[in-house]
Image 1 (spheres, rainbow, N blue to C red):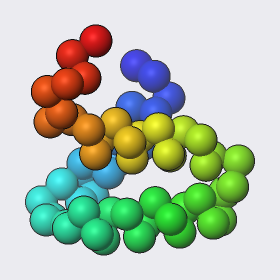
Image 2: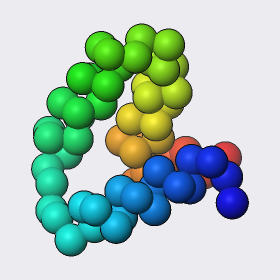
Image 3: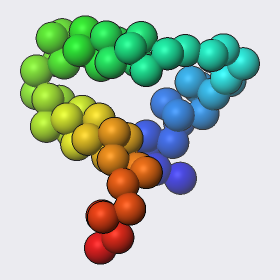
Length: 60
């Protein structure tokens, strides 16, 4: 198990039954980066990956 899996598991356990909007998630990611600027690149990569999940042109 990766260290990050613990955080993901905690998120699922604590908030797994909730429904949130992508706008809400984007605001939380912005807040996180504002508080932790050293994580700007990984958060940007995650956001871009999530935004492009359904893109058919990115099959590589």
